[in-house]
Length: 138
Image (cartoon, rainbow, N blue to C red; front, side, top):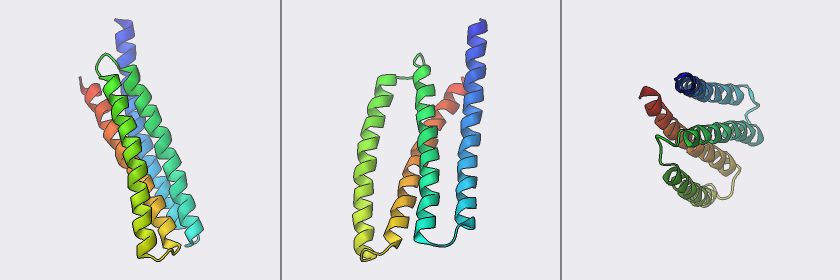
């Protein structure tokens, strides 16, 4: 019984931590963009920092879902993640080509691509966090 209570306490703590971390990532990203010199390099660096944070959180969430294999179809989750990674790379390549052509190779393309990639990881991570929320409600 102690182990079950401890597991659910850990899951709840991890979920709350995940939601708080997501909010912090967004806040830090906004601060970075507001406080950086308005240059392509500065904007891209802010987006890359946020992307790294979203990737880290996504990996933590995936590990938490895997740890709850009793309530999740882990093989399907990781198959889905593998397909998502492939889609994400292909989608980003198209996005980059589209904006490269639209902006005629200008530096705005780099900012647009960095922002899009960050947004892809943000959305996927929030999607995965929603599963943890459902598990927490059980």
